[in-house]
Image (cartoon, rainbow, N blue to C red; front, side, top):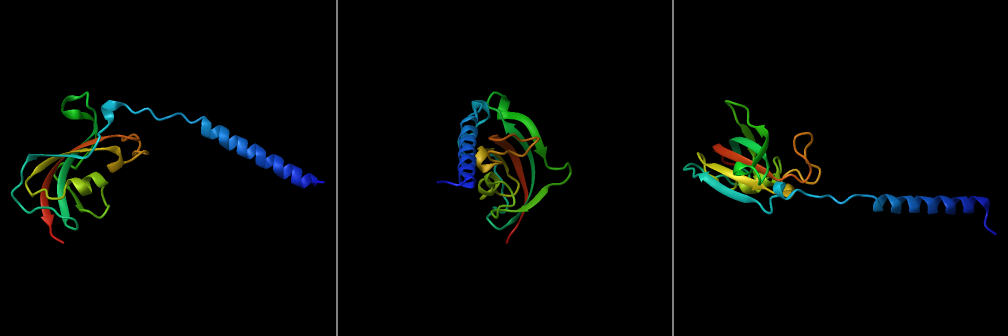
Length: 153
C-alpha cells in the first residue's frame, strides 16, 4: 500500500506535468509582417571607395544610419532607429563579434571612402528578441554605412 506521502507526490507531479503541457499549448505563433523581413544579407555599394580594404581584425571608423527594414517605404527605409553621432563616427574591430553579425559579414572588403547599404535579416541583426524599445523582435534592418578609415591589425 502506498503511503500518503507517495500519493501526494504523484498528484503534485501529475498537476505540474498537466500545467506544463497546457502552458505550451497556449503559446500563440509569431506572425511576421512580410514588409519587415529580409530574406538574406544584401550588400550594395552605392559609392566604391578607393582606399584601404577592410578585413577581419582591422579596426574601422564608420558613419552610419540605421532604419527598420520596410519594403512598403521608399528605399525600404522604415523608422530610423540609430545614427552615428554628428561630426564623429563609430569605431569597432571587424569580425570579432563586437557588432551585429550583419556588419561583421557585410563590411569585409569595403574600401575607405566607400558607402555601402546593408539589408540585414533578423538572424544576423538583433534576432528574435530585438533590442527594445527601438528594435522589435524579428526585425529586418537597413544600414547606410560610410567607411572613414581602416587601421590594419
